[in-house]
Structures are given as C-alpha cells and as structure tokens.
Image (cartoon, rainbow, N blue to C red; front, side):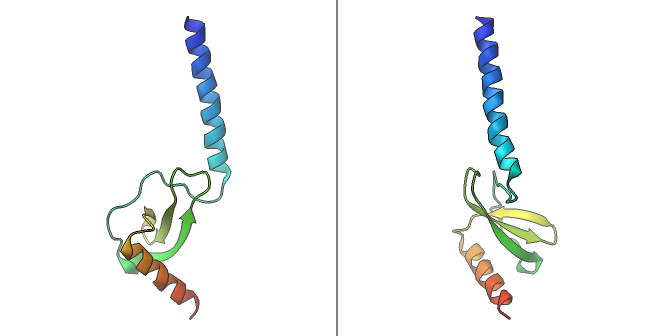
Length: 90
C-alpha cells in the first residue's frame, strides 16, 4: 500500500519536473497571474506576448519597476500596445 503511494508521488514529481523544465527552457516569460490595475503609461517601455507552454495567454509589459503580466483583452492594454507600436514607426 505504501509502495503504491510512494511510486505515485515519484511519478507525479517526474512529470511535473518535465513540464516545468520545458517551461523554464523557453525564453518567453510565463504568467500565472496578472495585474488588475492600470499601469501608468509613463512607466511602460515595451511589451511581449507570454504564450506557448504557459497556462494562459497574457501580455508582459516591461516597465521602470519590472515586468507586469496583463490581460490582453483589457481596453487600456490594447491602447498601450497601439501606442508602443506607433512609437516603433517614428
């Protein structure tokens, strides 16, 4: 009985290690949570899409104060992305 439980735990740890290892090898950030607050525009430097092996597709804003995961469907996020894209073409 204890052998079955122990082998189940070892097997689970093995599969989690593979999944987390694959996520760690990507050069894209992975967001587990996102900010519900509007980040001040003057803090934002750039953005990137967090996707792939991540549990949910989110955007990552790089700011003066670090990186923040945000919901790409939020209106303010879409506005910021448009502004950042416009800055690239100046």
